[in-house]
Length: 137
Image 1: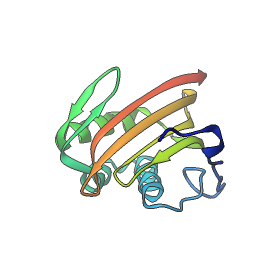
Image 2: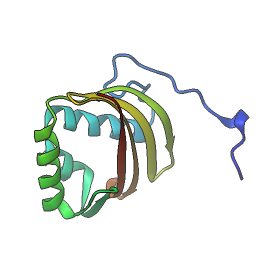
Image 3: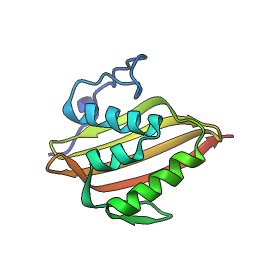
């Protein structure tokens, strides 16, 4: 079955949510937790609670495999960022084992469009695709 334009769902925004959408599904709650870990700089908790031991994170710049490498990646990532604010979650799609989104984020470097896709296994991330495009500096 192919999605039709009439099948599009309007994203409801919650200005009090860290991810700026109504968190009304398990995957949206998982996403919100992900952002809360990042905002807190808690990469140990993020990796231990959200990623499988053998998880892989893939971007155009790098491939990161396993808990130890993910912790080093997030330590570097959060160490470089003074702050991260999700301005809006602009696109969202999910199933029972996957979710993907496009969001607008603000850091000390400016505004960026970020996109991520996740494949979960047993409730934890097995594969994470990530990328971003700076919009304003």
